[in-house]
Length: 366
Image (tube, rainbow, N blue to C red):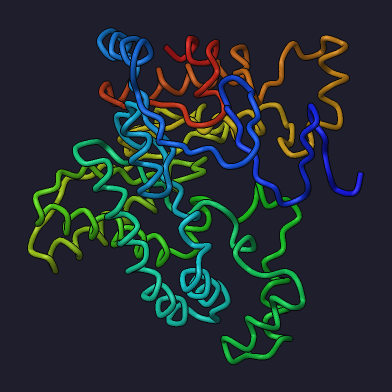
């Protein structure tokens, strides 16, 4: 009441600081001095033993140099997923991104992408530094473009003024991006194949950053991942853009660097035809969140409306988005891994998603 809470005679009001111990659940009044967590004691010994005997390698999801540094301290041996779209939502970056999306022709898009390039390259350099000597897998732009534009009147008006165009023009372009089912719509490799100039810019940023650090003596192992591939030719078209842009960049800089090109396996058809995709893809990363959605036909965002009843009636034993469905989704993963390695024995495979931190799912993949 009155925006206060009383605990054991201590009254806290809105705006007061409290500190939480995430391990014990203890709550402290006020700000408690903190320090960065680190590997130490019994936990450090246990992790050392795990590193000695494990056959699986654990990478991190990291989109910033800070996240990469923290993960490295805790034993990550690389980055398994760097989501480039998370880099676009700040200051000048989002302005240039919106300019690219709303451009009316390829020249307009290229002009805007040229503004984005140095920002992306700087972000990648920071991440590479933090992960020196470890592989870094960078996923090309995945989400649909409508996620980057304002949908409210105020935001659209500000964007129109900034771009020097009419509000009506902005509204028309934003409306044109609307999709009935964006999760299955214009995203991932479909976006890259429709707008190959985006893939070219990101390739230049990924490899340009690596080459700059190579000159400084920093060891970098870049891996470029094409998202949401369902057809071999979706992948090969993107791979062609990547390798052609890489060749141009290497010629310009008078230097080169080794890199891999692989794909996310998150569409059932990709798993079923993995032996074909692996003729070109050098690695697979199983996006188990989307693969579960498309295999079950469940929307991850809407499953809460019926999941409790399904669990109560034992229709489902567990939430398939938390625990890997070994009989269905798992069978696709096994099939894709075996199919891919039948044509590329050294194919590197990993999983990326909620299931990567769930014990029974990890055991199955092991």
